[in-house]
Length: 270
Image (cartoon, rainbow, N blue to C red; front, top):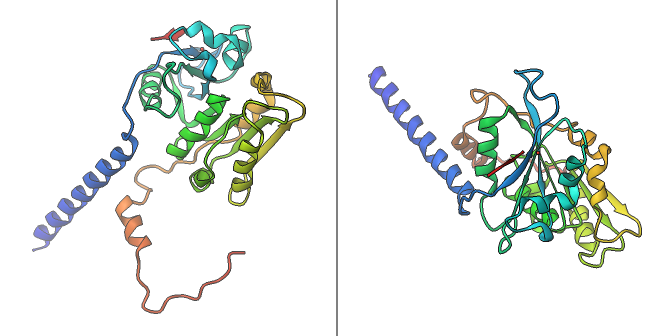
């Protein structure tokens, strides 16, 4: 009888695990998976320690760098400074968005990440996302879609839906925007920061006084990269994590005598 019960328990466990694996996979595959071309920067001393894993920055460009010519990515932003010899202790991935798309049109991130992580020693706990203009919007949107993937983000002169605040509440965020931006008003960042400040203690907002839309010099700001490195995802070993269905059951507990409520005090790869 004990053996029979044990087999039932194992079957139920495997069924629950498969169900939730499929459910979680479904939530990340709602967009069509595509392969975007990208520039890849590898730190100068990458080969010195064969056991070292490296933090990764995903850089999202603005509309004018869209298309099929990877060289256009080096006209401004982080790829520009890297092409001029900027030294960084990060692997930097700079994908290129097609002209008729934006950063939210398709699931480009997972295919690119999978390829890079298969070839290089990537620290999965230190993946960062930064971008300007269309890339700023993309930074907000991608972090909202995958809030558990990024250790920190920095959207510049972009905007987002304030309804995303809850999803973004645990992601350290540094926002930049020029006060004289006529293309994307600074109010687009202000409303997001205001919504996040109520629930996210790790929000920084830098208003660039009298600066317009082109604030790409911020990608040469070493303070930004020092700040990114202060943040890392804290992932438990899989055997210590609660199973998803147990979390669901716990969340739906019914109390016969409910407790009193209290007030909450870069070489290119194709």
